Structure formats: structure tokens, C-alpha cells
Amino acid sequence: MREYLDLVERVLTKGQLKKNRTGIDTLSSFSEYYKVDLSEGYPLVTTKRMNFKSMLYEVLWYLSGEDHIRNLRQRTKIWDAWADEDGNLDTAYGRYWRRFPSAQVNPKTGQYEVREFDQIGAVLQTLREDPSSRRMVISAWEPGNAWTSKLPPCHYTFAFNVQGSRLNCHLTQRSGDIALGIPFNLAAYSLLTQAIAQETGFDVGYFSHTIIDAHIYVNHIDGLREQLTRTPKQRPKLLIVRKPFDALQFDDFTLIGYECDEPIKFEVAV
Figure 1 (spheres, rainbow, N blue to C red):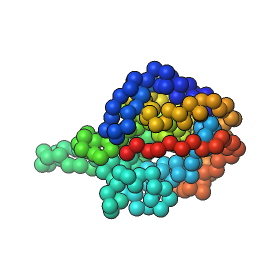
Figure 2 (cartoon, rainbow, N blue to C red):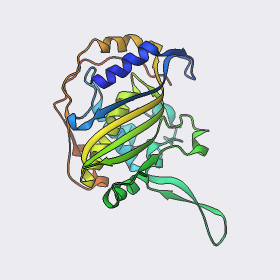
Figure 3 (tube, helix red, strand yellow):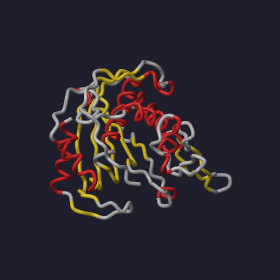
């Protein structure tokens, strides 16, 4: 997909050498942005093989609202490095998407009490009742948690917006690993946008993405240069079974026509 390769080229060209917590230096660029028209096909990167199944299990885990990886690790090890020995994850995206702790004052006691708020559910309801709303924002950043977490949310907030009959999504990310993370983020939020659009009767629109610290680890440079020599292939299609949103399961998603180049090995910086 050309939009992704253009992002890679920009960061390789203008990125500044920068140290970070992992001990592996990066080429870092501030506030990178790209935009993809989802009506032109599902934007799964084709210039290397992507693990669609792993990404889908991760998204469904987010939507479950779980804050541990006991079920997820049976399918993918993607979060193992950041969970404790019991599988608990101090920053689990789905927990905040579906059960964000909201402090409310009890009028009888004058004391704050915490209730859980389903942000995904609120967006679905708003799209049905008031699709022109500009308030369809979902946050995974809870300050008390984020400032002490082993890995605070990278893709920390996203918003939906309707233009005509099309549902658009914008993701803001504080930190983005261009080689490994961004292709997964693009695929995951595009899938989520399509599923929500189908549930609420909209066509898919654009997915747009702002990355505050867009970076390439120095040990990923050669692999990304190899990827830039490859020609993007036609985007695949994603079919989702028409059933209630919260009843969707792994087998309800079918990827059609995914042709891609060989995998490129990139080491994960933890």
C-alpha cells in the first residue's frame, strides 16, 4: 500500500537519531500522518506478509473488555512480554474501551464513586441516534494508570466522524514503531471501522492516523529499505458476517484475495 511506503520513506529520510528506553536507537520523526480510503479495499500491507489471524484475535480480545491475557495467549503471544506471570495486563486497551473507570460524585455522600463506562457501546448508540455528533471519542489513556504502567497505551485515542453515508475513523498515537506496529494498527482500526459501519448502517469512509513519535529502530532500517523496493499489490477484501456487533467471533471474518510478498523479519524492541 503506497500510503504506508510513503510513511516509511519519510521517516527514513528525515528521521533524527534518538535514544529510547529499549536501548536500541531509532530514527524519529515528529507528527507523521497518513490517510487511507477504506472503500478501495481492506488496507492490509501487501509488501510483506502480515499475520492477519493474530491481529484479528487481538482486536476481538480488545472488544471483550478483558484486562488479562489468559485467553489471548492461547492464540497469540503478542502481549506476553508486558503481562505479569498470572497474565494480568496493567494497561489493557479493551478494559478502557469497554469498562473505562469514570468517577462520579454521589449526591448523598459527596464522595467520588467509580463506575465503568462502555465507550464502544456509547459510540454505537450515538451513531444510531445522532450520527452528526462530533463527540464520538474513545480513549485508552487513564492518567493514574498510564503514568505507572509498564507500557502505557501507544494508540491512546480514536474518534469516529460521519460524512454523508460514510463512517470515518481517526487514530492518534503517541508512539509508533513503523516496521512492526503501524501495519498492525492500520489493519486493526480499519477492521474495527468496517465492523462498526456495518453494524450501524454506514458505508466505510477514511481511516486517518497521526503518529506523534513515528520511529524506525536502527536494526529495522535494512528490512524497510528492502520493503521499499517492492510494488504494492491490489488490496484484499474483508467480509464480516452480518450479526450483532458484540456477537462477532473469529470465524465471522473472511479475508479474500490477499496476495503479498515474503515476510521480512523485524526484531521486537521490548
